[in-house]
Image (cartoon, rainbow, N blue to C red):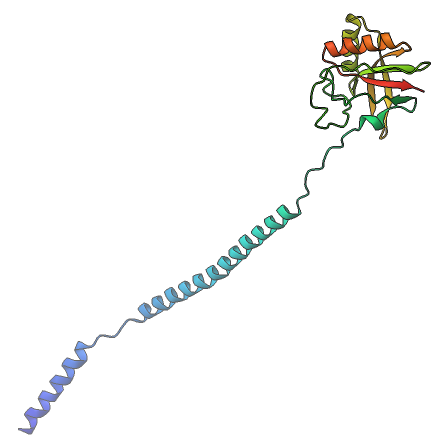
Length: 206
């Protein structure tokens, strides 16, 4: 009876050993390599994301600074005609003047609300023993001044072009009539200019 019991125990042990299977070593090695690769990718991606975020934030901040510090467009200087007259001429104040329609690039007088309204020509009384000029326009381009002078000659007005250098070294070409010594001829020339929608400036010669 003792011999039979011994044989049964050995058989049971053999069955248990045969039923358990060991995991191959290469499988453990492959799993370790895979985990290592995943960890490496996560570590490498995390700093890049941070750098991208900082770069975007930095670019946004720079754009705001640039927009805030962007200088406003410089205002172009407005030429005050009263300060551009040569020393030999004195402007006679008679009525508000606005820019001549025939001189889009001419020197511009100060524009006010009153000057925007078209008014009938006003007869200005000239002082005796004085000489006066009528200025029909002033241009940077001499060709524009010559064209206006040619028109005035066709209308029977004796016009000339005078080149002057103003402060800053800019050259202007002024279309002038005169000089006038008689009140009647002065007013007649002004009325002719007004009839052709050309405003004029009355200048007194010293």
